[in-house]
Length: 171
Image (cartoon, rainbow, N blue to C red; front, side):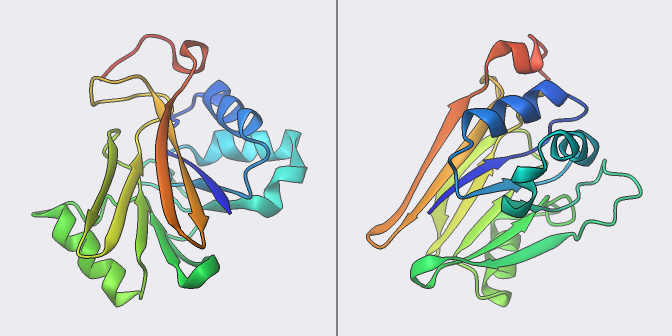
């Protein structure tokens, strides 16, 4: 199963289109918040993607009715916790996310908010941030992530967005 993960599009409709259309064979799309409106607009244009969409609200998704977290069962006994993360970054966010994963019986946590690529294992839990699809803050190009869940394990990767998705703006 392949999950295409993206976050923090911040009013860049082209970034949403580029991620989703370039990975349309992914089994699911996971959006980690801060861009609900542009995801909604895309899903209005392309409703065939809606049933494969998992999404949560971010701190800039004002008035959103989306949940803050989603706890998603995955094949081969894995469980993924999806959140934006803005409520969990006070102090040691790594420790906070690991504790939250354990509370939710998850071995994968995908999150946004930091606008930075993160891909690491802590205490048997994968912490994965796709970076920002429109406004990176880590000195790298805007990005998305892929998580492949297989019987043999979990494979992760980050990909660069085309410059047309987000322009040249770096934060």
